[in-house]
Image 1 (cartoon, rainbow, N blue to C red):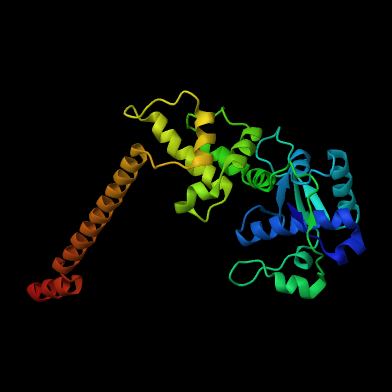
Image 2: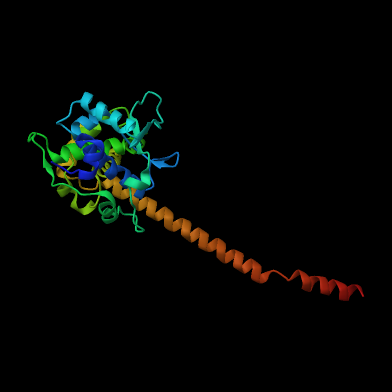
Length: 280
């Protein structure tokens, strides 16, 4: 895995801080473009120290805490907690001066050109000296932490509820191979996991489908090798489409009936005139 940082950031805040800033720039810009994690007038990203240690295997968790605290002291980032679950201690991070670090173009993409022109002189990527760490694993692990709340919502009320923990999210994300899911690209690992959870849940609830004895193992295998859309999902989609068409037909009929009613309705002014003539 390669790491990029700004020379200007390194000179101003320190080398380690510059690497961490680059990470925050990516995720905060992504969330800003998608209008996600908006609180107190800022765009936030959330992660744990453990997840950061997976993303940056050359730092210990204590070093990561020191770097984050340094960025807070130097006025680069602010820290808060917007978790919906009280016992969830995952920290949220935002730039104190977001406009200085993040530029979003009118089409919703991060405008790197303006960033470079303003203060960036990026060095060549630093190679990851830990060759045992797979790039896909570290990247996807953070994707899942960033969208963990959405995945928790996706599994609510499904056979997976209570079975998948935060560590399982990372494991399944690491197994996700985009090449095995070409027909669904572009999609992130988290989006792919949500789709596979939905499909597998349908299959597990379908009496006509083969029972799945190990749901987590099945999900990991499908993340690696892809998954054919189950018959139960196809039937559900067909039923949903049929219901949508029925609703449109009912709406059309109501509109036609209302139009006929108005066309056949006698003008009140005309009725009043008739009454006036008959009474005179």
